[in-house]
Length: 353
Ligand SMILES: [Zn+2]
Image (cartoon, rainbow, N blue to C red; front, side, top):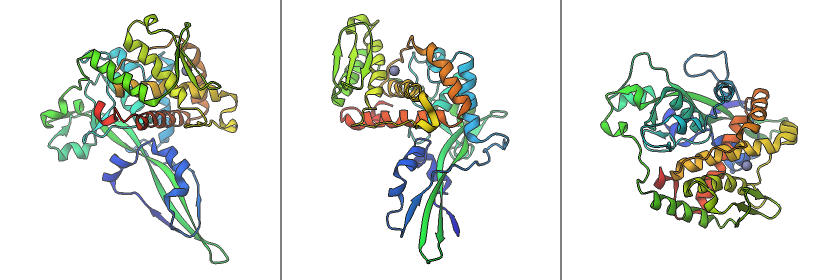
């Protein structure tokens, strides 16, 4: 049996392997090594030491515990930043690497959570080493934030008949990232606060076009916003019923994440064995996190939903039982947002970040 690390270049993971890849490994494992003799995929995750020496908790637990702690304080990690930011309006951007690449999935939640807690208003994060390379230095006493990425080990085994089987075993690794506000001496451009278009009308028009290009069927009337899977249709109250058009689109962002779940689209499955009858609660968590990602990407303020409170206790109980549930939800949320961006030729993520 031979083991080899396929992706071990520390530079490559910061741009190619993120938490959202976790499920891609799961779903695309059979495509990963097409030319090898016989391939079987495993989706076991190995616990690795955390980057800052805290070996007592695995990565899943550390990330999950932060989200649980926020929920127990009555905060939703994906909502809180909007409530506490005051330097640049109500809408926070997606966290970025130093090369401008957006973080994805669970890392967005972790970095938003840290930004909210510490009051960071700049979106850029980097490693200690990268800061040094760019001429900066992490300030004394600053603690970084855990960022995760998926890696994999390829194992090849030869059976008694001499046939070789190759399997890829994904596992999760982590490294520490620092916000630029924890770093001194970087070039000035890294300290700029992001600004979405000042022109609200133009911003809303962009969002309108983005939604139109998904070709989702949206009907108006009544006083409830919901997605009907049987009719594959989003029902929205008339736009006049909302505080403003930003509030209307933030509500629609939530419903359009549900819309991506239709069997003809992403058809998310939350296994009966793992989640029992809690699948709909997981779907609601995906819609919550997905709409937060989407609103941040589109530059609109997330709308706090009245039904949040009813779900919080359910989410807490799922997260406490299953330290990978938030990873699963964030990964599905990211896939939903990427799917929507894929439908819209008008507005790509890189243009709105
Ligand atoms: Zn919902």
